[in-house]
Image (cartoon, chains in turn orange, red):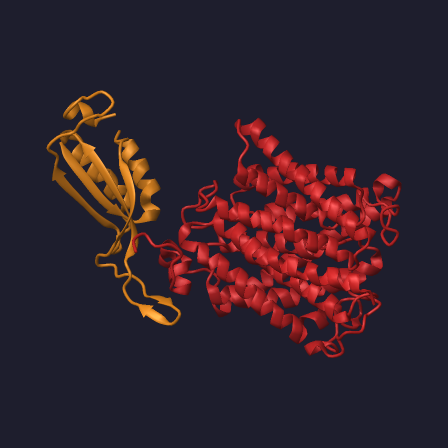
Length: 114
Length: 410
């Protein structure tokens, strides 16, 4: 079991979701986050006071998958979020020690999927 | 001079200001994505600043000044020369000329602001400013002269437009459609509405529009009299009927009525009753509201999706279509029994008025569409109308104004 964490451009959420559904990955958690990478933030000005390099809005996806879904999931996110410019985001994959489905108390691989 | 009339028109002027900010600003602001809400508020706010100045400098004189061949006013009243406390009996015999001028100023302000709905979320700020000034000067001011100015050719033809169906709504709505098509779709727009970021804002704005519209319509009587009362009641009745009808259509089509639909229907009703309110009785006002909701619903929910143009906030679907419905309906339901200064419509045996109203809509559509096309081409060549793709993606608030509406973290 792996936890896939992806940081993507907000306007790419729809195409990433569609690409994930194509490979049968339907369960995910989505949050609004701020971040900065190689794509620098923009200057903001409030009553003449400048704040350089503010953080940019991004979307974070948290997706728990069984091992044979890891590569399809990575491929789908990459396909849906790619523009080729800086700011497209990153995908992190970490080992997942346990997963429990609260409604049924199922554990492990059985608890992850839809 | 009549102090009651003067007080009413001054209050109505303030009501119409309320329609642009915060009314329209929040109505539109709630409908866009969170990254663009400040751009809408800024556009509405700065239009009030810019057109107020334009109107004092030369706009009022072009629209209402001494007539030049029925097409435009001359510049004799530029800088409000001679526009003072004495009434101008051609326009309003019982209130100061300056009060008539400032009441009309608020109409000149809100009309270009309505167009914002078409180019929302993708226009460059300097281009928007230049477009607005050119449009106000070369589209609004002549049209206001044609319909309302002494000597204006549409007025002489017998146009009935009580509070601005042609001048305000058909003109801005058609221009909005032309702009939406020329500017192209927003990135990510795919024949269905992009989800509004704050519907309570939209409801708040819509409610303030309804409130302010009493000044817009009943104030257009330019007196605190029975015609103003008729306009007030016709306005409320048509708006209620339109809001209810839109909700009912949604209930029937989708199984549930929505607040966005109800507010949109109400605004369509307000638009459609605008040219008619001083000439029709309450029962016919109800019918006009009903017709406006049905036809605007078709325009917004069915035709727009089929044709695929991105009139982002339905400036054409509500104002262009609603204004046309109202202008034609005025030619059907107007009656001299309500307003002796008006005329009878089709329903009361006067086919001529119906034909005049239809003809005026066609001329206005052609004029506004052609002028908007030309002004777009000029502004696009000088500045460029549309923001760069990466700026559109990040949003207009950060890229055009360097500020953000909401914080994600403190």
